[in-house]
Image (tube, rainbow, N blue to C red; front, side, top):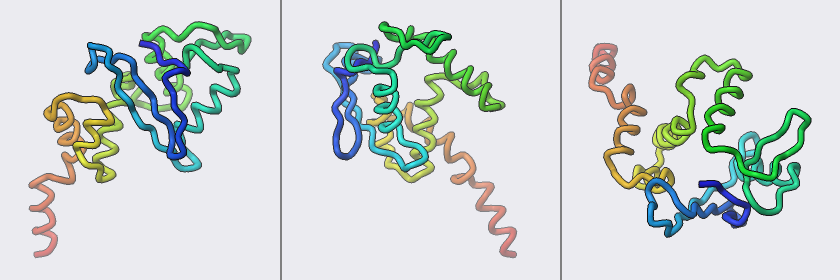
Length: 161
């Protein structure tokens, strides 16, 4: 599934993207995802708007290949190229976890980071588009493996004595 400019609705609070079909919406009813404005240093809404303006994209696929000469293609990126782009960017940034980085890890990372920021599990599930509580619960348990740890309570008790 390729996202298109026609799937976007700009809002005063951010952006609403309609996913015409997804893994959790096989019937193709469409799912709306709200993306709020971020802060000045990281804002996915402003970044997308800037990309569309700089690339001169007014309709059609949102994400397109860029030639070595800097020309933006007319067709959308191949879905498999997303992981390649992530890998290249991670290597350029000097990240040491490149082999673990994928489009799925971004989605999973959103769940982990949102939970650590005290987001409600119901909201995490809705934003990530998961149907089953167990999937989100697994990511939450992973995110809280040190915070919600019985051994930590024992260590605190020992330090007090």
